Image (tube, rainbow, N blue to C red; front, side):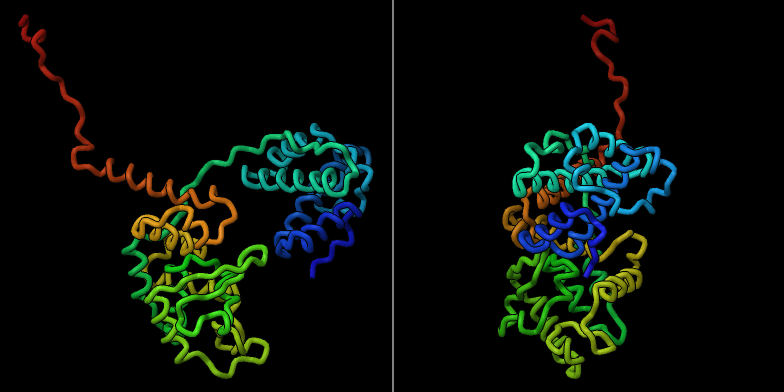
Length: 336
């Protein structure tokens, strides 16, 4: 359990609110803590330069920040902080966007929930424009290549894991959290727990059913007591960890000749979504529910993938490289 005792009282209340009332994950809550600590350190340097400007930024105690100083923050202070993140901390657009979002929700909490300030000083500040990046994914042939190359002492288990990733688009944290009791008796569905501890039902196709049935025949029966219900077991008889799954995916990608594609476990999630959208003609609203996205805008990135494929198809037309040549007109021949 992360210790937030060095944070000011208002920050601790906010983090507790995110943890308990909004049921945010521990990882997310820690990120809020980290961003508000950075913001507080900046404020101390910005507001009290005589004391803090010569101090090592990362060593400035979070406990030096006071509730009173946080309550007096202005929009200009936040603008200065975002500029500092860009110029001094060398934060990219995404990092600055995340920090501003954290500050905005913090002051929304102070103004709307605790009612200790009248207005949210971050409310009217525009977020940095985040460039839209197309997700990286495997093509259909590359996906088949990955599946066909799986080998080794845990091949049946690993094949099942990759099959679930490529067909269901689940997150790695969701996969390692699956218990035997989460799978229906007929292998048609599985319950997973996603971000914010939100549960969702995933339907399994024939490929997933077959892979699961094959794996359960060889799954170790003597898993350690605390992990006896875990679906995927390590060689040490424990539940497979997120890091272990990441490493085995990297290993099989490399063995399949796909290790130079900068692929990762999460890219297999992108692959599943892309294949469902392109080949299954899955409606983007249905895809949103399959992937467990909260916002439709998150899912709509896959529509851009399809547009990119259309652009590539046009560019690959065999006539695409022919340049215009001089065309003789009637005037060139002195004709009327």
